[in-house]
Length: 435
Ligand code: EPZ
Image (cartoon, rainbow, N blue to C red; front, top):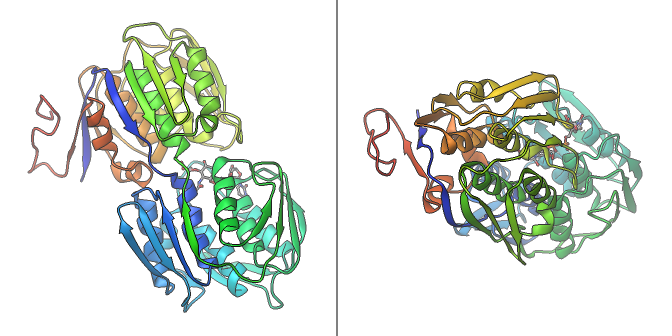
C-alpha cells in the first residue's frame, strides 16, 4: 500500500509551476470525440483521471497518444461504438461528459453512471433534463444511462435549477452540433467552463457568453481538428498558496491566471498572509510563528470561494487565532476529512454544512487516510505543518488531481517521501528515516 511520509515543520521556499487544469482537461479531452478529425491538446496535467479517460476513449475507437508528457493527440475519426460501460467509467465523475459528446455527435449514448468523490448524493438530473430539452429520450437502467435522439438534437432554451458546472458543460457539448440555437440560463461561470467553450470555438463551434450566466450555442454542421492549450489549474494553484500560508515561508506560484484566484487571495489577505500578484505568478509569504486571523468562509459557485478549496482552507484555519466558521454551500457532506484532522489535534465541530473551527498551536503528526482528492491534499498540508511525522494512506486519491505533487513539494523544501511498501522503506524523507 503506497503512502506518503512527511516530517513537518519546515517552512516552504522556492517556486512551484502549476500544471494544466484537471477539471478543464477531463471535459476537453472527451470533447475531442465531437471532432471528425485530429485534435492536439497541450498543457494536459499528467494525473490519474486523465489517464483513465484516455483508456476509456481508446475503448470507443479513438486513436489517443501522448506526444510528450503533457501534449495529447486524439484522432476521433473512427469511433466504432457509443457504449462506454466498462468498470473504468465508474471510477470518475467526469465520465458523464461521454454522454453529452456521444449524444451530440452520433445521436445516441450508452454510458455507465459516473463515480467520483463521495461527499453527498451527486445526481445528474440537470444533465438529463438538458439532454431531454434538446430532443433526446433518456433512461437509466442497471446503472447505465441510455440517451437517444431519434431525429437528431434540436436547439432549445433552458434554465438550470443550480449553476451546475458539469451540467453546463455537458449540455453545451451536446448542443454544438444540434440543429438550431440553444440557450442555457443560470449557467455555471467557472474558468474551466470558459476554457471548454474556447476549445470548442477553436474547433469551429459557435458559443457565446461562456463565463456569464447565459450561454448561447448556435449549432454547426461539423467540428474540425486543431490545437488547443488548457488553462492552468486554479485549484492546484490555490492549494499551494494555502500550503505556504499554513506552513510559513515564501513561495512563488507560477503559470497562473490571478483573476481565477481572486477569492482565494482575498481570503488569505484577510487572514493576514502576504499575497503579491503579477501577470502570471503570485508570491505568497508568511513569517513562521506570526499570528493568523480567524475568518469565516462560505463556498459558492464561481466567482465565490470554490468548494474544491474548502478542505484546504479549513485546514489552514485550524492554525488561526480564534474561532472560524466554514459553511459548505455546494455539497451536503464535504467535511468527512475532519475526523482525520482531529487525529492530528484539530478542534473542529461539524453540524451538516457548517464547521466551527477553534484555533490550535500546531498539528501533531499521525497516521491518517485520504477520503477524497481535496481532503487528501489537506492532510498533506496538515502534515507539512505538524510536529513530528505524518503518514498518509489512500494517496492514489490525491494523485487523481495533483501532478508530481511529491517532486513539487520537495522542490519547495518539504521533507516528504513515498513508501510503496514496508520492505522498501528507505530514507526518502530527506534527513530522516520514515518512522
Ligand atoms: C464539478 O463537479 C467538479 N468536478 C467538482 O470538482 C467541483 O466540486 C464541482 O464541479 C463544483 O465546482 C469535475 O469538474 C469533474 P456541480 P460537478 O454539477 O459537475 C448538484 C474536484 O475536487 N447537482 O457544479 O459534479 C450536486 O450534487 C471535484 O476536482 C445536482 O443536484 O458539480 C452538487 O450539490 C470534486 N444535479 C451541486 O449541484 C445535477 O445534475 C454542484 O454540482 C448536477 C449537480
